[in-house]
Image 1 (spheres, rainbow, N blue to C red):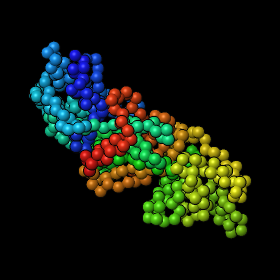
Image 2: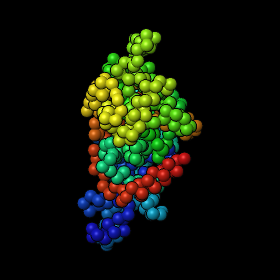
Image 3: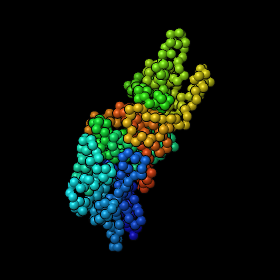
Image 4: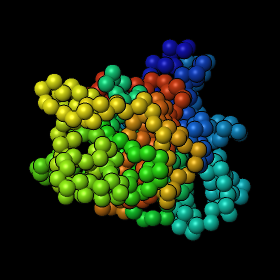
Length: 451
């Protein structure tokens, strides 16, 4: 009986994304005992990004005594009212379901009771707890939009990214904080010297900034949310200077200027670590030394934002070969010291530590102040923002922060906002891509679904 059940439905096992416009979702279809069950995965309630995922059963497939399969709809995880559900495989890697008795999903209190129940499940809050009027509008918009499907959905297959030995950390699914409200699920994958995070779900609401791309359908599910250049590491300054948003902006925007020059064929575009530049006092001392005819500058290196600085361009050129592999600037310097004369100060620069203190700049908003106070590495990256309805999308520079094997963050400089990401610990069955080519093709298809 078990093989009779699995054979006709073996192709629906795995990971799927429901076609719910810009909002997306995550469905895992697995075998449990004598049943095939479809579980919808929901992020934990904001802002508890490290809490486990919530999951809700949508349907189950069982075998009757006459060896005929039954597809049953599950109206709620508490009251398991089961009834027949139409199930159809539309084409390869796509299927749809439709409830044949939608009246069972209605509540005695009508739409108002349905909305309150939905809101508590999505957010764990009531509408009275949400004071911002625009946020209320976004939440109501999602409820109306998703309700029109009336439990008739189409699902498209998605894969987990295959891991490679060269990856910065194990790829996979992460929960992330976006703006003022809501957690979302992203897929982190690696493509050579580039890391990408793709949205799988969009939370009911986000920041009221209409170009934030946080939460509301500005940047829809299936689109890229983060892109990180792993050939451009950023060396953080000391804790006191980390608290300055101007200092962080100077570092990141300096790398951004290098990238822009490279994109237009300009000079000085070689990738390399962006080190903290001199403070105002050090710059003043350097000017005095230059006036007195003394060569060289502060041992801290040139500011990465100073595109006209010979020291800045020299550091970028020296680290060009080592940037893509994440080699530290000191390692690159020491490896060429036998053929190129260097100062004792440069050759004795210690390698970056395995971990370093980290603190968010003042004025940067974080949904949860409980973030790690040490990090392993930082890289230049960009985050995607757009107007409502994914209009006028653009990429804005920021800082990717690797905390450990299961957590990373992104500082959105323009928005002065911080997103914290934590790995999904759930074991998702039948979800791994058969090969890298199939995974790359899936990513391209996902972006076309909501373009």
